[in-house]
Length: 155
Image (cartoon, rainbow, N blue to C red):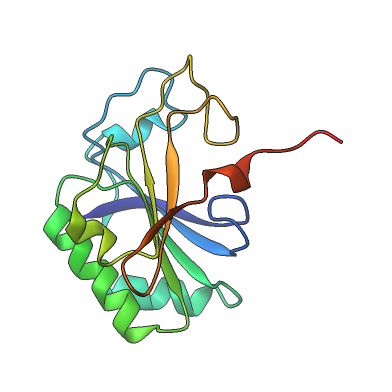
């Protein structure tokens, strides 16, 4: 079962996208300095296809659905991502994973995949020293590292 705690429409989690971010609980990672440590807990409501429908219908103007975390039921999360892609072909999908690397089955169902645990000394995704990476997955399965799009350039 995949549980979520809350949602928010965000503009900086996926470059050039208006993303419905769904915060997934039961995070297995224990990253020191995590900005959302409450997501480690077994809390929230079950995320189902019907809930996804309601959330998407309630948030007109989005063009991406972001699963912010994996939770503890990866097969079910993949089912939900597949459901989203099939029933909302005009929306892209994203997953924020804290794993160093993700498996091919994840890249097969998400348009954007963020990998890497948060490491305080490396910084977050928006600094060049980060260990985290954001990949755009092409229709042909290719993976483009687009992490640089998060880095702010001083002028």
